[in-house]
Length: 166
Ligand SMILES: [Zn+2]
Ligand SMILES: [Zn+2]
Image 1 (cartoon, rainbow, N blue to C red):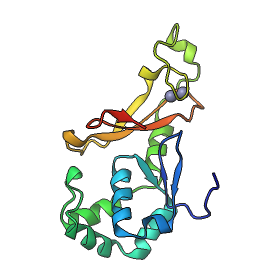
Image 2 (cartoon, rainbow, N blue to C red):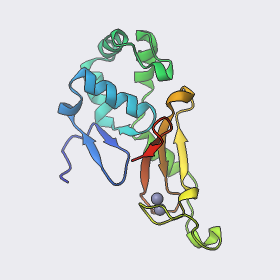
Image 3 (tube, rainbow, N blue to C red):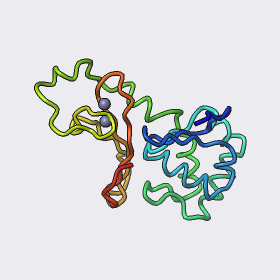
């Protein structure tokens, strides 16, 4: 897949890598879906993405999303709460969580055989780290998981209500 010049966001799933460009988020409906995914680390916003939001206007975006009901799963409903959420966004947050996590350099040192292999990377699936935004309401829990083996780029999204991972 061609990598676009200006990437505003990246969907965090190793098998299907999707980049968000300006035309993908220029519509407020699409921008809402994108930011909803970012809030639970299913997608990452880049520095260019944050610069784009600032250019559109954080106050304007917050006001628009307030009329759409905000982000009730996270308790960001009023324009003020949405504005705080927008200003708290950090670039590539899921990637930074991965980078700050202790990684296993030798999978064998975990002991013995791989019990249930991950169908993406082949390392032990049970060892994959599961990450979620702690502010989420339990009914809607979504997030991402990644393989703890150093150098492994295996990453996938999950959600509890649908019981699926992608
Ligand atoms: Zn792996
Ligand atoms: Zn894996």
